[in-house]
Amino acid sequence: MLWRALRWLLFRFDPETIHHLAVVALRALGWRPVARRLRRRPRPALEVEALGLRFAHPLGLAAGFDKGEVVAPGLFALGFSHVEIGTLTPRPQPGNDRPRLFRLPEHRALLNRMGFNNGGAEACAARLARLAPEDRPGVVGVNVGRNKVTPNERAEEDYLACIDRLHPFADYLVVNISSPNTPGLRQLQERAALERLLGACAARARALATPRPLLVKLAPDLSDEALDEAVDVALAAGAAGIVATNTTLQRPGAVASHPRAGEAGGLSGAPLAPLARRAIRRIHARAGARLPVVGVGGVMTGADVYDRVRSGATLVQAYTGYIYGGPTFVRDALRDLEALLRRDGFSRLSDAVGADVRATGR
Image (cartoon, rainbow, N blue to C red; front, top):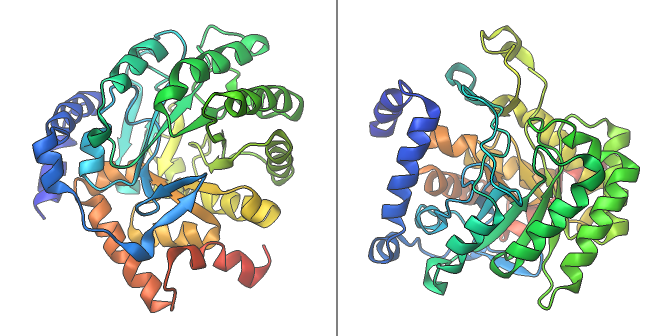
């Protein structure tokens, strides 16, 4: 009840103003004496081994919240098992003009056209370099993209530059080719472009002195055929996994009649759930254990985490769910997730991965 009242107050203000206040609060939470006191108890049944890494549980924070500020210590203190930083570009860029972030509370959704606003790879690398091992009790992922002014023909240069600069500080890397807010970016999901880009990035990640798992983030708006094609390309390139999905350009259901429905940008939150679930199931059905899926989109509760796991996700991420759920979002979601696992007779989370796909065959 306290969070609902506070959320009502916070939602009276501009979303980006509140984001900046949240960053300040998370820096305070990440102060080591505070963070140590907030550490959660281990949950052995929820532990995940994926991408050659160990995760305390499946629920992490999706890219888009920490845009290079590196407030991961505070986010770990809130309970996330992993934090994905980015999307980062080689050179700093301001992103798209404001206003560019909108709340749709009646739909538990956000609409954004941020446009990869970030301080650039160099600034983020400097911040990450200052983190001590104690500040990283969980897994840190780094999500990379191209600058807005870089044409797709030269996109590979931007992605490789980010990988080269940021890989020493990343436990895994994500190639973002699916944001709807950088003109032309989604064209990189087309087969020929994807083969070139993902092949080059995966090869670079493997050739590092300490190789890093590299994943690709796909859009929820791909057709079934295009999604299958992307999975096949990812497998052939040697990608370590797929993040499914980014925000959607669609305005499903009642969102279509919302006054903000005509705003340009990607929709996230509860209305995205069916699209994200469909993509996760299709990817898992096609690739199985060969290509772990990080399920993103419409994850608002522990039941949603469980749903994505049963749909085929090995790991799950949230962003909008955290905005609406507040500081206890992770604690509440994990409590409900454990209860659902017990209800269905699963002793370990890994046993539930893809259960719905196994039951239906798709």
